[in-house]
Image (cartoon, rainbow, N blue to C red; front, side, top):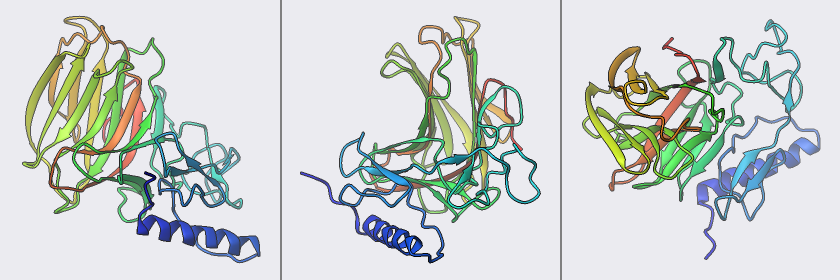
Length: 306
């Protein structure tokens, strides 16, 4: 049976479609943020397409072209300000990956007001979208809402698809709203083979833990007694070094300080873990879990915390 879009998603999409009609006759209105919302009868507003890869009703994804020209205002040409360009309906691509430092593969502060650099992996009524409700820097961040136990609400990207990479670093700032609950997975480096990768978790006691799984069987868990403060932006870094026994490593950093890891881990059996997932996957039967994330860096060298 075909799932029906929620009332909220229908309202937003109808508003966006109406806005597109007004623009077509010369009216100027504020942009409606609909990235990641469910499609309305297979339709999305102009500039978006209905992505049905994960089944009906589908999700609206941005099809807005990128403007590689200079940013508006005092920003030098070729530098990505992360903001909308002066041209109509165009977003500035800047130098391509948004990074100024060598070794970085992607830097995203979401100041374009969209998640267009990423794919989205969502289950059921879960949702991932850019938001102006909370931001660590600038005006925008990402809201990830896991709708129920086991349901994913992730930004996803095959950023580490080069088999010669030896060090993988993922940095992201997360904010856990007070009362929203924290029994969830927030960060994953996933391998090409099923059940391979490294994940980072936050549990209801504000204690962080992580696990790794190689060849679908070797699971290592390590509770890390770090209290996570609600309503405060926290910097998380996850590092995986490829190598055999005594060479490979898994490390976890919070606000710049190492809080856990597995020195000498053998990670060579699976090779580079290409896929990055950031957001929320609830493991709490009690319901919805919401997080905000911002200022993401994917790199082959340690990004550090600002």
